[in-house]
Image (cartoon, rainbow, N blue to C red; front, side, top):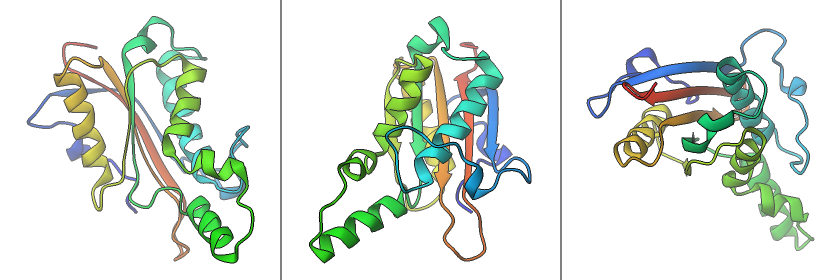
Length: 186
């Protein structure tokens, strides 16, 4: 599954990163597709609740309950997904093909920045927000993006999220979130 960040991806030649917190979905047998909490304003798809849940787990592990406080001011959010929210994309495509009305919320949630805005507002994260859809290695891509933000002085921390929905071939929805910083900024 593409929603992985292997231990070998924790450091890079660009910057030496420190992992402040990490969370996964699924993390236990209780993490089933139907157990993701509903998120107001997001419908139909499990993608956005998946992103929110793994982000919440990671941020709580480091900051405790929201908001993040002053540390949130320079915390970026980076989301990478190979497939993105295919459920929403398929629903919009089907409605357009059938000539029927597309529910307005689907337009809102079809942009992955919408769910990251939800996380940022809840936690008081005011750093840059970046979404990427690399063909392969989303974890590597997301961490490289965080490195660029650190090197440019745009952020001191980055919540790096990799998420993909199940393809229906016996796999599960998967996501991982890591709160990282460049060594010396922790």
